[in-house]
Length: 491
Image (cartoon, rainbow, N blue to C red; front, top):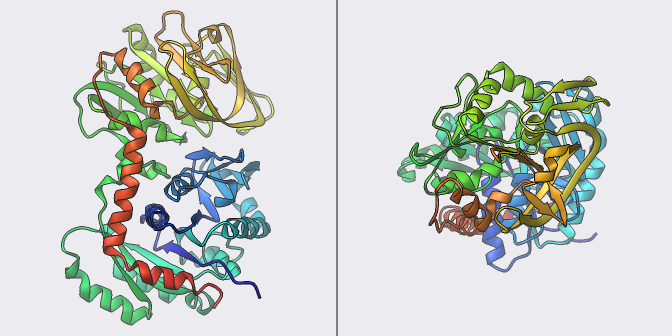
């Protein structure tokens, strides 16, 4: 029997307990030791996606983990990606490609048929690595979803991967959460769990020694350590919109950029470089919160469901606020879905986002958009027209946009004009994501608003933060036990 590549899976007591960061930190830690390490997540649910080196899309967190591992992001690192389009349905992406939109019961029926693709992708990643760090999704004990599971214990059982459970002490009840997981799991799944760890501890962790002992006694699991709160987590791209609150700048001083937080906001890591830029105050607006009159720039971000989010924007009254903002001489920038909203119309003749329909846009750009099922996924590079600064980023969208204002495109991408601009220059839009991560372009753009002299380097900050995250985990977790457990795969 061929030797199985060592692997360990980090599942959680619930969503947002820090699994993604733990996997990223361990990937950077092992990569610095010269070990070939790779991340893997069987199923992810996120509207924050990244374009891969092999031309598909995966969750943003897996792209960050690949970066931490010093690897290119590949579709096999996240073979099933669910992108919520409504309260009851999601676009389903399998091995980097959209296969359609499914409501809850339909996806429940589809899910078991995806396990072969998940295992195929896992084996492809495992063949290229000395160790694989796997991330689960949600709670390890969603026993009502266990039948046909591909995200947690179902995958771990099929791939013979040992499991560690992560508990988030900051939200409270971590002892009950971990012991409760043990109590709920059927025996076949209990045998997969080898260890547990505590995440996001604040204060003196020695005070929790008795808590650790209780969990060990009740579960029989090995304790891998207590990771303190990592305050720099907000400097890294986030996976889930639950982290949106941390994207706002801590200060309200400086150039004011406001972002309406629409229900299906996507690819919101576009905001991160601006939120961290000295001299900039980036504020996410909650529904019902008006656009302040002193805002210099309104930024409309990407959306997973453009027409639905445009309706929400109108319902919240932001359409009137945006028009008033432009009348005052304020600037507006739309990215991807936000760009589509700024035009005269959006048509969805084939029902890509729901029922076939056509709606009026905000009318701030003389362009029209037609949505279609042909999704564009591409890494791109070029320059900003106004500043002649190099830009790199990615496109991930369905739809084509054209009209007279495209003659004033803000970017030249791969030798073609990209985006549109109003005749007075106050309103611009483009499909390309990631441009604010380019330090030269970001500084030139902000200089138009009187902000200059910053030495903040976004990409260097991400790299330094990954290194500090690795140091953080190395100092507080039993790394050698993690390696030992990974080598138990298949035992």
